[in-house]
Length: 292
Image (cartoon, rainbow, N blue to C red):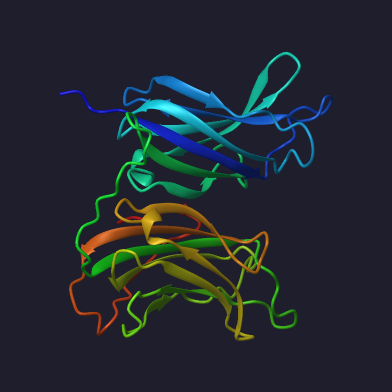
């Protein structure tokens, strides 16, 4: 029996941190979105229009593309090109595996391979191929779950204490739908040295109990001054059931983002009376990767 194909709606929002490619004619960046088959072949592609004015190193497209004949398991590949007089140059690529947007969609930032500090903001929605309606989401009964939450690094934080230096840390809290629920939260250690405007934690915590539909809230705090720098919220649909890996914008700091990974780990083992906060510390010098 043939696997049914679907249509994808891909909203290319903006990019940040691109590099100059054409010093004579100016940069004209555009994005090509392609469906990458299981065998590595690329068959379906759609392109945005080039950005020709304004800040072309941080271009805004705000353009929605439609790609036909996508099947579960097939990766989306985003390639950023710079359009020149006689052709286009490749600036970098980003990949979005199927499990991050099927069936519940994706909204977030992707790291651009080849450009260390560049990011691409996209939204992906799976649409039924026959009737054009969004694929209905099938939710299991609401039960308490465990989450693995990796808090990797923040970028672009503000200086909060100019005399003693900053010591930022992150609070991750489950925003329970039931107001009578006990608080569920974990904290990272404070970063006290190095680049505290771009602090690296590399910590993984087990968070429970969590129920489907409950968002996660990340609060950036400064331990010395006891100040809150900003917050970021990750809706449940972006990480359940397939997990989430990417950046979330920090409200209150226009250029600040937080790099996180969230993975559902199955039913909670207890009633949540005692919160597990098992930690896995990731070494920055050995690469910013989390192992499960």
